[in-house]
Image (cartoon, rainbow, N blue to C red; front, side, top):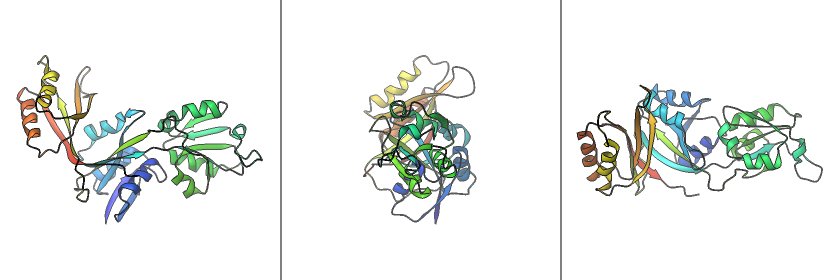
Length: 288
């Protein structure tokens, strides 16, 4: 049986992984921190790691990209998107206003992961401006804190899965500020992922420009442009070697074995750029 490392049980990552492997027999290995997720697979304890890499509201998760680039050598095996739906979770009995509805004035503190908290700020400001806000390592940890501290008027922003697992109530559903809140996840590891069947395959690369070549980025983009190769993402990140030194993370909407891609990479390398292939993989659509 294959195994997958991921962030804690009850998080959006957990929901996304259960969706991804809904028809497969896979062991889930829950880790508290993203560093533990990466290391689990890098050290050979699991076959794959699942990494949230980008969100429609917050953009790229820079810490996770840096881990993928600088800390581990784990090829990307697949990607998929999954809706990031946050809900207000607590004890309906404890927070009831006596009319069958939860009473905002009875909530003294709201807890969640900082990214989830930021995605729900409009809701918090309109419904819970008086509540203390506390950020934790995961949304699931917030729900767990509420469960373990009854009678304090605490609530959490988290998933329906976490509420169900811990026997708490969803006081209000879908409290994120935007309805189109999706997260892109990567499956990374040294073990190939063969089951995915999709017409869309992508390739992710890193390009480091030569320091003494003015206009190198223009040349790089031209290598793709004249071949009509579509780039779905291009992002500059520091190399961490010296100030002002950057690499470019690029997603290409073609597989590496397409006839156009090796030619573009060869042209880029010919002007002195360093190219690193992060993976060529299926891009799976959300079918929910």
